Length: 242
View 1 (cartoon, rainbow, N blue to C red):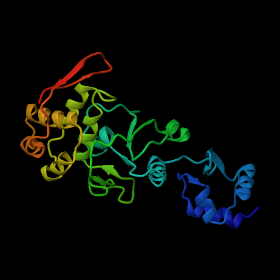
View 2 (view 1 turned 90 degrees about the vertical axis):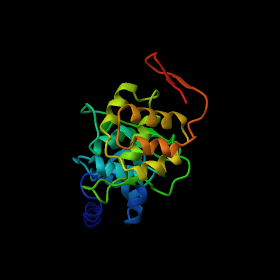
View 3 (view 1 turned 45 degrees about the vertical axis):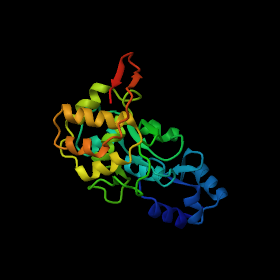
């Protein structure tokens, strides 16, 4: 038993934080020693190569930071990001987290049990500056990246007809009155989804949102000439004309 090393681990990994084999190795804990700590009850295994301290409660923010260090482009986006930034409409207490990243990945079971989530790598944008429209929340400046309202709105619209209902999306968008035209313009000019652009321009106009004209100018002639039609999960059909 190496109590001094255990104390070092407890200092390096604050309560509420998951950690993995690589981090343990950097602190001088070999695989054999980690196994010994597990058998002795000093550590608890969460999943393959991932641990926590016994009798600990993992914090959501720390778990998200853990995932963000392992998944390229990882961030909180879509409807969740809108809600966290104050734009919401009847969000249930146990709403699934909307998580985004680059490339396919499977969220760990231990994380899903604590914080039910949906992950997508279907980025609606083409080329954007690195981390454009992604910032930590003001109350957690060193925390996980969260889409700003402009990016989160377009991410949510990309989910319409897939995981996102039409009526709810429109109701949420109605509350997005203070979007920044310059940020939205950059995002729309780099958007590669006709559905997203058409929904944004059409609903902004119907809802008389202050930034509706800026959205329309941003897409210009990029809305295409053909009608966009999708059969939704509830059996209804969404039709978006040019």
